[in-house]
Image (cartoon, rainbow, N blue to C red; front, side, top):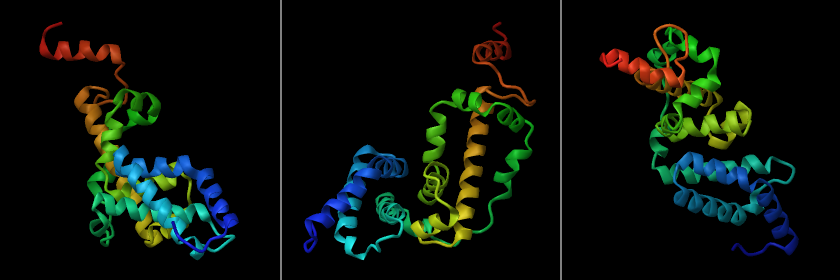
Length: 209
Protein backbone atom coordinates (compact mmCIF):
# COMPACT_ATOMS: atom_id res chain seq x y z
CA UNK A 1 0.00 0.00 0.00
CA UNK A 2 1.04 3.61 -0.45
CA UNK A 3 3.10 5.17 2.30
CA UNK A 4 2.73 8.53 4.02
CA UNK A 5 -0.92 8.42 5.10
CA UNK A 6 -1.96 8.75 8.70
CA UNK A 7 -4.24 6.19 10.30
CA UNK A 8 -7.08 8.69 10.14
CA UNK A 9 -6.57 9.27 6.40
CA UNK A 10 -6.48 5.54 5.72
CA UNK A 11 -9.61 4.98 7.81
CA UNK A 12 -11.36 7.83 6.01
CA UNK A 13 -10.49 6.35 2.62
CA UNK A 14 -11.60 2.84 3.55
CA UNK A 15 -14.83 4.22 4.99
CA UNK A 16 -15.63 5.99 1.72
CA UNK A 17 -14.83 2.89 -0.32
CA UNK A 18 -16.99 0.71 1.90
CA UNK A 19 -19.88 3.16 1.61
CA UNK A 20 -19.97 2.76 -2.18
CA UNK A 21 -18.42 -0.71 -2.47
CA UNK A 22 -21.48 -2.50 -3.86
CA UNK A 23 -22.20 0.02 -6.60
CA UNK A 24 -18.51 0.24 -7.56
CA UNK A 25 -18.27 -3.53 -7.96
CA UNK A 26 -21.63 -3.73 -9.76
CA UNK A 27 -20.46 -1.12 -12.25
CA UNK A 28 -17.20 -2.99 -12.90
CA UNK A 29 -19.02 -6.29 -13.36
CA UNK A 30 -21.56 -4.88 -15.79
CA UNK A 31 -18.85 -3.19 -17.78
CA UNK A 32 -16.47 -6.15 -18.20
CA UNK A 33 -19.09 -8.96 -17.89
CA UNK A 34 -16.76 -11.43 -16.21
CA UNK A 35 -16.80 -11.94 -12.45
CA UNK A 36 -13.12 -12.88 -12.26
CA UNK A 37 -12.07 -9.89 -14.36
CA UNK A 38 -14.45 -7.62 -12.43
CA UNK A 39 -12.86 -8.65 -9.13
CA UNK A 40 -9.38 -7.90 -10.50
CA UNK A 41 -10.56 -4.57 -11.91
CA UNK A 42 -12.21 -3.61 -8.65
CA UNK A 43 -9.18 -4.48 -6.50
CA UNK A 44 -6.82 -2.75 -8.92
CA UNK A 45 -9.00 0.37 -8.95
CA UNK A 46 -9.20 0.52 -5.15
CA UNK A 47 -5.43 0.16 -4.88
CA UNK A 48 -4.90 2.88 -7.50
CA UNK A 49 -7.37 5.15 -5.71
CA UNK A 50 -5.59 4.62 -2.40
CA UNK A 51 -2.16 5.27 -3.90
CA UNK A 52 -3.49 8.51 -5.42
CA UNK A 53 -5.70 9.55 -2.53
CA UNK A 54 -3.38 12.46 -1.81
CA UNK A 55 -4.43 13.89 -5.18
CA UNK A 56 -8.12 13.81 -4.33
CA UNK A 57 -9.47 17.25 -3.45
CA UNK A 58 -11.50 17.15 -0.21
CA UNK A 59 -15.01 18.44 -0.70
CA UNK A 60 -15.27 17.27 -4.31
CA UNK A 61 -17.13 14.19 -5.56
CA UNK A 62 -15.22 11.15 -4.26
CA UNK A 63 -17.72 8.79 -5.89
CA UNK A 64 -17.20 10.29 -9.35
CA UNK A 65 -13.43 10.31 -8.80
CA UNK A 66 -13.37 6.55 -8.11
CA UNK A 67 -15.74 5.84 -11.01
CA UNK A 68 -13.20 7.46 -13.30
CA UNK A 69 -10.48 5.14 -12.03
CA UNK A 70 -12.70 2.06 -12.34
CA UNK A 71 -13.72 3.05 -15.86
CA UNK A 72 -10.10 3.38 -16.95
CA UNK A 73 -9.37 -0.08 -15.57
CA UNK A 74 -12.42 -1.48 -17.38
CA UNK A 75 -11.35 0.01 -20.69
CA UNK A 76 -7.92 -1.56 -20.33
CA UNK A 77 -9.45 -4.91 -19.37
CA UNK A 78 -11.74 -4.89 -22.40
CA UNK A 79 -8.98 -3.74 -24.74
CA UNK A 80 -11.35 -1.23 -26.31
CA UNK A 81 -9.83 2.04 -25.18
CA UNK A 82 -8.53 3.17 -28.57
CA UNK A 83 -11.71 2.29 -30.47
CA UNK A 84 -14.07 3.68 -27.85
CA UNK A 85 -12.51 7.12 -27.78
CA UNK A 86 -12.32 7.64 -31.52
CA UNK A 87 -14.40 10.60 -32.75
CA UNK A 88 -18.01 9.58 -33.30
CA UNK A 89 -20.21 10.46 -36.21
CA UNK A 90 -23.94 10.88 -36.06
CA UNK A 91 -25.98 7.91 -34.93
CA UNK A 92 -26.91 5.57 -37.77
CA UNK A 93 -30.36 6.54 -39.01
CA UNK A 94 -31.28 2.87 -39.42
CA UNK A 95 -30.91 2.42 -35.65
CA UNK A 96 -33.02 5.38 -34.60
CA UNK A 97 -35.63 4.46 -37.21
CA UNK A 98 -36.64 1.48 -35.08
CA UNK A 99 -39.13 3.76 -33.30
CA UNK A 100 -41.01 4.15 -36.57
CA UNK A 101 -41.52 0.41 -37.00
CA UNK A 102 -45.12 -0.71 -36.25
CA UNK A 103 -43.90 -3.47 -33.90
CA UNK A 104 -42.32 -0.86 -31.62
CA UNK A 105 -45.78 0.25 -30.51
CA UNK A 106 -46.07 -3.15 -28.84
CA UNK A 107 -43.03 -2.42 -26.72
CA UNK A 108 -44.24 1.00 -25.62
CA UNK A 109 -47.63 -0.33 -24.50
CA UNK A 110 -46.13 -2.75 -21.97
CA UNK A 111 -42.32 -2.51 -21.77
CA UNK A 112 -42.14 -4.59 -18.57
CA UNK A 113 -43.93 -7.52 -20.17
CA UNK A 114 -41.81 -7.16 -23.29
CA UNK A 115 -38.52 -7.31 -21.32
CA UNK A 116 -39.76 -10.25 -19.25
CA UNK A 117 -40.40 -12.25 -22.40
CA UNK A 118 -37.03 -11.32 -23.87
CA UNK A 119 -35.31 -12.80 -20.79
CA UNK A 120 -31.56 -13.36 -21.13
CA UNK A 121 -31.50 -11.68 -24.52
CA UNK A 122 -31.52 -8.34 -22.68
CA UNK A 123 -28.17 -9.19 -21.10
CA UNK A 124 -26.77 -10.51 -24.37
CA UNK A 125 -27.80 -7.34 -26.19
CA UNK A 126 -26.20 -5.24 -23.47
CA UNK A 127 -22.96 -7.20 -23.74
CA UNK A 128 -22.83 -6.50 -27.47
CA UNK A 129 -22.48 -2.77 -26.82
CA UNK A 130 -19.04 -1.20 -26.77
CA UNK A 131 -17.44 -0.49 -23.41
CA UNK A 132 -18.04 3.23 -23.88
CA UNK A 133 -21.72 2.71 -24.67
CA UNK A 134 -22.21 0.40 -21.68
CA UNK A 135 -20.37 2.80 -19.38
CA UNK A 136 -22.46 5.78 -20.45
CA UNK A 137 -25.75 3.90 -20.06
CA UNK A 138 -24.80 2.48 -16.66
CA UNK A 139 -23.56 5.80 -15.30
CA UNK A 140 -26.64 7.63 -16.54
CA UNK A 141 -29.50 5.15 -16.09
CA UNK A 142 -28.28 3.13 -13.10
CA UNK A 143 -25.93 5.37 -11.13
CA UNK A 144 -27.82 8.57 -12.02
CA UNK A 145 -24.86 10.78 -12.89
CA UNK A 146 -25.49 13.94 -14.91
CA UNK A 147 -24.15 14.27 -18.46
CA UNK A 148 -21.48 16.64 -17.18
CA UNK A 149 -20.42 14.22 -14.44
CA UNK A 150 -20.24 11.35 -16.92
CA UNK A 151 -18.10 13.49 -19.21
CA UNK A 152 -15.73 14.07 -16.31
CA UNK A 153 -15.61 10.41 -15.32
CA UNK A 154 -14.99 9.18 -18.87
CA UNK A 155 -12.85 12.17 -19.81
CA UNK A 156 -14.75 12.92 -22.99
CA UNK A 157 -16.89 15.85 -24.21
CA UNK A 158 -20.53 16.01 -23.14
CA UNK A 159 -21.56 15.72 -26.78
CA UNK A 160 -19.67 12.45 -27.11
CA UNK A 161 -21.37 11.13 -23.96
CA UNK A 162 -24.77 11.96 -25.45
CA UNK A 163 -23.81 10.26 -28.72
CA UNK A 164 -22.70 7.09 -26.91
CA UNK A 165 -25.97 7.10 -24.98
CA UNK A 166 -28.07 7.60 -28.08
CA UNK A 167 -26.20 5.00 -30.09
CA UNK A 168 -26.18 2.45 -27.26
CA UNK A 169 -29.89 2.82 -26.56
CA UNK A 170 -30.70 2.60 -30.26
CA UNK A 171 -28.66 -0.62 -30.57
CA UNK A 172 -30.47 -2.12 -27.59
CA UNK A 173 -33.88 -1.23 -29.03
CA UNK A 174 -33.01 -2.68 -32.44
CA UNK A 175 -31.44 -5.88 -31.06
CA UNK A 176 -34.37 -6.59 -28.77
CA UNK A 177 -36.98 -5.79 -31.41
CA UNK A 178 -35.24 -8.08 -33.91
CA UNK A 179 -35.16 -10.84 -31.31
CA UNK A 180 -38.82 -10.26 -30.41
CA UNK A 181 -39.91 -10.52 -34.05
CA UNK A 182 -37.82 -13.64 -34.58
CA UNK A 183 -39.28 -15.34 -31.49
CA UNK A 184 -42.85 -14.21 -32.18
CA UNK A 185 -43.05 -11.97 -29.10
CA UNK A 186 -44.36 -9.12 -31.25
CA UNK A 187 -46.25 -9.18 -34.53
CA UNK A 188 -46.54 -6.70 -37.36
CA UNK A 189 -49.27 -4.91 -35.42
CA UNK A 190 -49.02 -3.44 -31.90
CA UNK A 191 -50.02 -6.39 -29.74
CA UNK A 192 -47.97 -8.59 -27.41
CA UNK A 193 -48.16 -12.30 -28.07
CA UNK A 194 -48.81 -14.02 -24.70
CA UNK A 195 -46.26 -16.70 -23.84
CA UNK A 196 -48.91 -19.46 -23.95
CA UNK A 197 -50.04 -18.48 -27.44
CA UNK A 198 -46.56 -18.40 -28.94
CA UNK A 199 -46.29 -22.19 -29.31
CA UNK A 200 -49.72 -22.38 -30.92
CA UNK A 201 -48.73 -19.63 -33.34
CA UNK A 202 -45.60 -21.52 -34.38
CA UNK A 203 -47.59 -24.74 -34.82
CA UNK A 204 -50.16 -22.98 -36.97
CA UNK A 205 -47.41 -21.55 -39.15
CA UNK A 206 -45.98 -25.05 -39.55
CA UNK A 207 -49.40 -26.52 -40.26
CA UNK A 208 -49.29 -28.88 -37.30
CA UNK A 209 -52.20 -27.41 -35.33
